[in-house]
Image 1 (cartoon, rainbow, N blue to C red):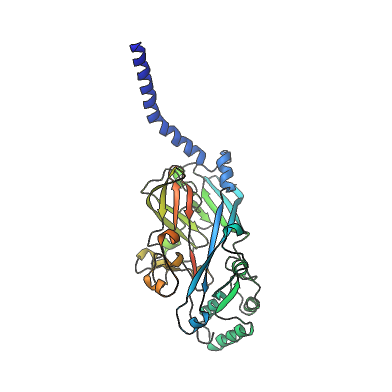
Image 2 (spheres, one colour):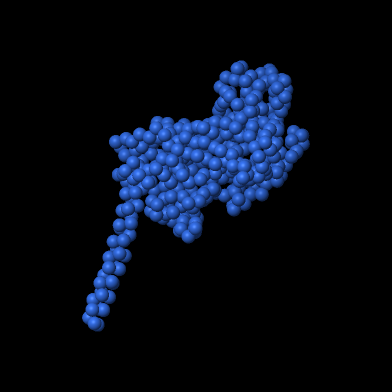
Length: 393
């Protein structure tokens, strides 16, 4: 009896040792096999092709409370209005596999308003800077005074001023504008749109371009990594090769087996650049272990504070990035909400801001073994550079 128990104990010990050694190897092989982009992996391929997990876009507006005083030189006073929440539906179309272990596709996106998750309705009224007038003013700054006076008179004829009061829905998805029709007729190419003008008018029912990514079939650490975007290895918006590089994935999933030394890179066509997040620490999402990756303070730093960002210049204060080069010359900047991680001078220029990491930081919580994000907040703010130009009032 004692011998039998000893043998049984030895067998259990041996089996346990085999599991400790062989188990992780087996599991890792299964992860590698199942995370390759291939129609043979039916479950994962279906999830990759038509993302079933709910993705929400929360939009906030800074309602300007003192537009007349701003025109007299006072600081803007704003109140945050929102969120106005939209469910984003994404699916990949025109999928083509290539012999070099890559796959090409177009990702179609569509947005639906979620009234039950929003603070109000799309009929809510807000006042914001008039993107058309102020954008055109800066772009016409170098033109002869006579041209600027002519355009200014047209603004007045169309009742267009430096500030705009519209519904949330109009600002988001577009509104009819006689000014847009006029500019497109007499100054073709000045505006990025020929139809209804809105902040995200070109986002809904649209594609983000033609992506070619690695399938991971020859190297799982390359899975989802972008090889080409619209046939290009790099963009041409910026002044340095490093800033023009297309790095990382498209921001939906990353390669497996991440460590605390890893970084998360992704390319955003909307931001016209690649971004890199850094490891912050470990946590859990519903009991599942995750690594949290966050935007470094240098993400939107200017070239003086962070030399690698010099290619994104001309720059202003650290904390805002000039994207006019990929927005038809419009004076548009992107930043973290409320200028979080930005130069204090930015906070001081507007009344009503309260930057903090919990509400305004950018992060992704990701399962390190599979590279799948379980929770994320990609928070960006669109800013319009306001500058009064002689002859345009």
